[in-house]
Length: 278
Ligand code: NAP
Image (cartoon, rainbow, N blue to C red; front, side, top):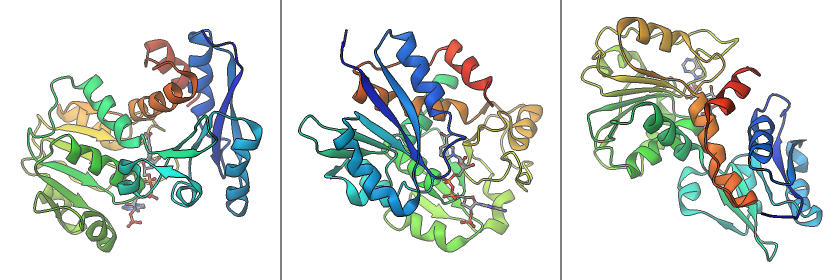
């Protein structure tokens, strides 16, 4: 068991809404470790100074959230190849020699969450439809391809962003026009919403599910609310559903392991603790 007090945290702007302190401090207590995880509100123009400060302050590292995920890469000494492909990092790990290494665990979080709730799920079961082409979409797409997905259809309101996202992939990834989203659901085995539509305070996603097979898993990256209008509609028509909380919880695990030396578990108690904050 470690004796040293270990500090980590999350840098974002704004960052007060982040559930990461609740997740990591729950694990610190659960595993009887000595340390703390804090919130660091960092303005964009102060990001470099704040990141360089990790070394001076002796922090084990930190999470990086909106709006710093892309910019923070510039200040790393090394970036994990998967994070490089994603073009963004969400975790910094300070090495014993002081070097800063960047990682992105969002895709890992999504896949782990899906596996946990749908244990028989396989990436090559059938076509996968991804709505949205932002940061979450890119992380999930790359992880699905690494898992062996063979057919992915990407749709985004702004089509050019979906085209840019899929440039590096072969024929297995196709872009479908947003206006065709109803038809794109035909024969799908997995539907993933990575748009912000359906989030608390936003309008719900405008999509007719009639063509989606009842066997298709419907998942949402959003976790506030826990059940988005999309998930509620899918559940009522009989589709299995997966909300965004598991992605949030599982993405935190590799970072915790890197900083505190323990690969933590997502337990019902942790879920309940975080749900109580939503
Ligand atoms: P982002 O990069 O800003 O992307 C936002 C996406 O939403 C874009 O594709 C955007 O389309 C689309 N969108 C926005 N308004 C729309 C509308 N009115 N109609 C249709 N599409 C619309 O954001 P992100 O970082 O990818 O995050 C996306 C969602 O995932 C957020 O709700 C976030 O909370 C969630 N998320 C969850 C986790 C987790 O751990 N569970 C992790 C990361 C993100 P345009 O390109 O046309 O603007």
